[in-house]
Image (cartoon, rainbow, N blue to C red; front, side):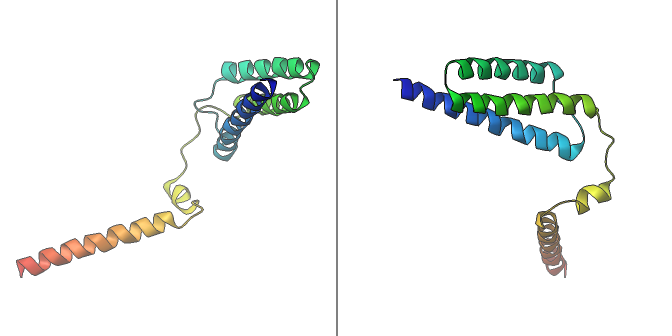
Amino acid sequence: MNEVITSISMLAVMIGVTGIVPQLVTMLRNRSSKGQSKLGWTLGFTANLALAFVNAVDHAPVLAIGNVLSFTGCLTAVCLVWRFPGEPEPAPVDELVTDMRTGEFAALRDAVIAEHERRTGDLNLVAA
């Protein structure tokens, strides 16, 4: 039974850490903490710090390491929330379009233009 509890606890820690990382990446990428709560991240930090202590004292080093990762992520988020303003200045449209990492926008644009030309071509044939 103890192994089941440990396994479920490890899964919970992994889910917690994987939930923190995208938030940190988003704040860093956007240079904004819009939608983030200082209180929420501080409570997450405090809870994970307490859990790390409990797991370390209870001789559960793997869980304690997971909690250390979690409270480090929460502490980083608290620092980012204080560092970056909640309302970023809007980026110019050109930066938004050209800053995309994939060619998805270009492919979508080409598909829309091709469909528009197909439809307007069909209308021109019907009108003639």
